[in-house]
Amino acid sequence: MAIPVANPKIQNYALKDDIAAAVAQVFESGAFILGPNVSGLEEEVPIVCGSKYGVAVNSGTDAIVVALAANGIGPGDEVITTPFTFVATTEAILIVGAKPVFADINLDDFNLDPDKVEEKITSKTKAILPVHLYGQCAKVDRFKAIAEKHNLKLIYDGAQAIGAKNNGVGMGEFGDASTLSFYPTKNLGGCGDGGMVLVNDEQVAAMAKSLRFHGMDATYSYQYVGYCSRLDEIQAAVLRVKLKKISDWNEARRANAAYYIEQLNSLPVKLPVSAPENYHIYHQFTLRFAKRDELKAKLAERGVGSAVFYPSPLHLQKAYLNLGYKPGDFPEAEKAALEVLSLPVYPELTAAERNQVASAVAESIKELA
Image 1 (cartoon, rainbow, N blue to C red):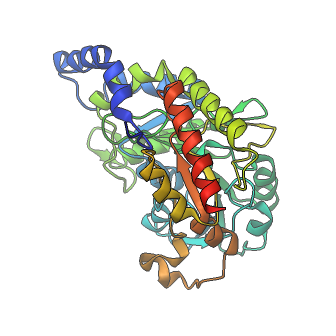
Image 2 (image 1 turned 180 degrees about the horizontal axis):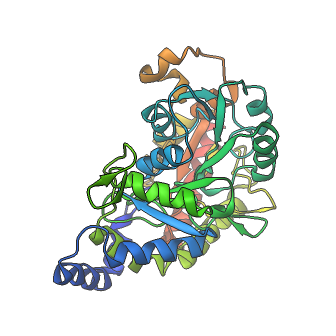
């Protein structure tokens, strides 16, 4: 049987009775927007992530938009971020009217390189926006020092990192804000879109809550130009059911990753590296191999799904060519885009499936090496 790179269906099916009961309760209540499930989720997720406040919104993309706007980022500002990530990070900066400024990534963890960030700072720079890519925290101590030195806002895109930690501290404690995505294939995925802004400042949290609801501060009273970005009660109800399992699921992902590393570490392939200070929750298990496309094809022949996250860095995408970058500007991001390949690592993998994946990778690499 073919093994997909992700399989949210099997996870939802295992919890179908609990999910159905939670959704039925929403229909019984008649409260579909900003009701008790949203409030409950906003209390429960910050406990997992280590933040004081959570503001639920309708997508991970909007979480970044709201986080930026709530921290005063807007037209005329520059925000330094990574070109090697999902498009939402760059898109959100442009949505609030600011300008994305790219810096290159680290070789070891695919995250934004702090050394490259500092050289990009100008008088217009107002924020740094690192991504905790693939489930591993960026170099938070370094970014904190840079942000404090230059009086910059520090906002983390943690869409792939719910439950990740650095030196035992949850990802939600770092910076001026962090964001989450509840897209169905995330470690905590809904049955539709959803996201959350995590903050530790009460005033920023209040601003984010206002912005997600048209800039309202009281019924039909508007202090700001806001957005319509409310997480609905049905998604919140589903997520609250699944949130109870997130620690177990993250541990299962880590166990799958450890198995792959044990089985594949003698092969001529670059495996993911988890920094000793990080608790990596392996949203993706991403290796690097020079003949990536050939490896992907051979895995498919052996019934193993894989995926490329991401095949082109954002500075080379048509939508962002007007930012003025060219091939060669960010060599590590460009090289990673040619070599990365993510394997199935979802928590429901059986021992037999995990072994099939590892064996398929080993056999394929030996054929290609």
